[in-house]
Amino acid sequence: MRQSLHIGLTVSGVVLAMAAGQAIPRAYTDRMPQVAGEDVLAMVLGDVRQILGAAMLDKAEEYFHGGVRDVACERGLGGAHAEHGHEEGGKELSAVPDAWAWLNGKVHVQEDRHIEGESSRELLPWLWAACRVSPQNVQAYESSAFVLESMAKRPHEAVRLLEEGIGKNPASASLEFSLGELLLRSFHEPARAERAFAAAREKCRPADGPEGEKDKLLKVRALFYLGYLAKQRGDLGRAREYLAEAESLDPQNAGTRDLRKFLERK
Amino acid sequence: MSVRLRQLNALARLSVLELYRRKDLIVVFVLAAVILLPLAFFEPFGVAGASRYMNELALLLVWLFSLVIGLGVSARLFPPEFESRTIYPMLAKPVGRGTILFGKYLGALAASFSALAVFYLAYGLLTGVRQGVWFPPILAQAFVLHAGFLVVVTALGLLGSLVLTPAANLTVCGLLTAGMLSFGQRLPALAAAQPVPGKWVLQAIHWAGPHLEFFDLRQRLVHEWPPVGWGVCAAVSAYAVCYAAACLALAGWALRKKRF
Image 1 (cartoon, rainbow over the protein chains, first blue to last red):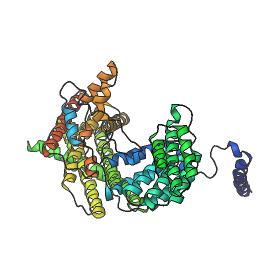
Image 2: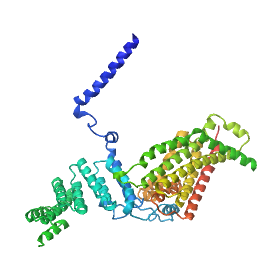
Image 3: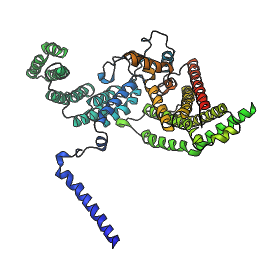
Image 4: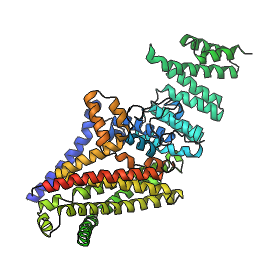
């Protein structure tokens, strides 16, 4: 009698738990702590993913410089980290001779060496991890595409990756612009490139003031390419429209000046 | 003299046997295999041939496990003897406190070195199979300096086991090791950027703290930089021996003052 009561209670508990599991997400759709359809990584790590993604990207940058951190160098991955802050090793800061700093300088490499050619594949695991851990990290997609295209000579993979990045960051003008440049540079496909630049122009909405400068520059660069491609296919009227838009944004910009000169040419 | 050597030998052997009896080495090997094996078949973006990330992760595990073993063995040398009161018959043998201390230290070192040799052998085989580079000279140098690291860490663990509780000892030594490996190189710059009390503290740490980052050749090994000069290697090894000697002298003083 007692055994059948236990079994009955257990079965009822299981049924109730399953019913609650089904009903609660439907009843409180907008108030659930996790968004339906998120992957396991997103649910477990939350916003820590952004930090991890940035750390992976820094690791790739470190690999690019032969394992040396915090180097003063103008070259970076895709111009992403164009210039790095150089943290002084300490030897210049100390007035007394520092034997420990001297030993450290001898043990740990101080000079800068860039990874090139086939060795660039060594960067890919960290870039891959940065893209997977933090799909909202646009910089990770751009740097990865740059390495795949320019260093590893795998432009098809680079295009696939940028398209994936655009899928995950539909508002990113920067990714559309990178895709356009890649299509023009490596595939000589002006039609597809023009579509990407047009998407970049659409998505790019520079804010007023200094914080919008970066977006403004991106939009002018997209307009330069659009004007250039429009003239190439003989649509001068369209090209002049792009020039006018670029001039309204930033008349002194190198992209605007170049487009003006290009359109003035016969 | 020969009696002293026999005593040291017996004490050291006990520590080595203890490591292998506890099967720590097998546990860390299985853990390393579980982490590294899936990565060995990983092809990011469909591109094969990347190996440095594997080497870096493998070396990170080697460092982590060697630290766990070195600290674990050295921190366990005295507390169980005090707890179970087996230190009395040992001292009554009679074996001097200095001999006990040094013998146990040698044992911890021998146990840690044997584990380290196994790790580096496994690493050498891994890189040989994956990259076709079998035991380059820099690997020997990395092993020598890593052994220097263990010389310091086991001495610190031993000293800590005499003045702190086991949990506090492991925590302090672990934090000290991680802190020095991460920030040791940048201490002068960090000190220079601080206002006065913080600056003095950081400078004191810089001058007196164990510079464990001296022993870390992972960057050169992973990124295929040339080896360091053997003179530098000798200087770093001498630093390890001097630092460990200072820790053992302090530990000897603590053991003499200790009331059981």
